[in-house]
Image (cartoon, rainbow, N blue to C red; front, side, top):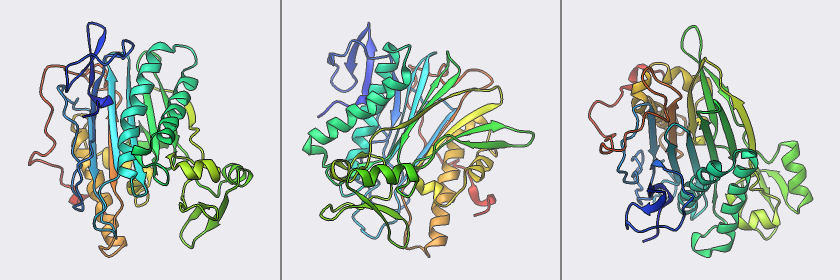
Length: 367
């Protein structure tokens, strides 16, 4: 089988595949502790997506949930993906990816693996222009999708939202294409205050519309949202930037160029929340922060589950049980009383099960 970027570890300076045990030929690979989703083919509504096997223990301050939605095409599987990679005492790289189109699950899984791995490698070797290093990673992944038909990315694609928490510089490097939002939560007198780190890439935004029309596409409103279209092109994206979607990129002006910003962390900054629009379509960032504030940092998994539970419940209410988008939540506390997120990684213990019976009860949180 193919090697997976989330399963590469360093042994004496050389990379070794966790599955095969063979050298991967990438001596510049950082020493990664990696956790993430894996394509599992599940089509059951609200089913949790399978996680990649890992020899390392997920820190208690990392929480995640990735649920399959309820779709008109009953054969459609969960197209969301997520990944978290850690270089101990240096940085964490967190990503959420929301696939779309017939092969959206394949594209989001490929991007999840390739983009985070490439970003981590580049950050180790690029101390100066880190923003440009990240931008090159997005462009490299897009070239790979365009040049390899096996990914089926002609009219399928994915969002990508990636946040690098640099412990040494005490800042966040935020990059994204699409509409999977990243939110920074800060302590306030009572609870947490949400700060949006990303702006959704919508076709109707002036700068996006100008690029799209200049490059041959058009923006139309279909009664529900604005979409990027062109006669003869089968896709009609409701976002103006993505990875994959090769025809829309080549013919309609859709872009893979990420928005990137660096944000210095302040003492009150507490946690990062990345989620797909299955959350943000039914919940505001501040509502999400209010839910997270109900749980201590070492119950990040319960907080992530609670957010997913509430989002799925709201979809049921809003659509009379007929539809729900895939829902993905990735929550990471930036520090803890004993150890920061990046330094709190144990390479010895087994993976923590997230299917224990003491899952959080979200019933007290209003829908």
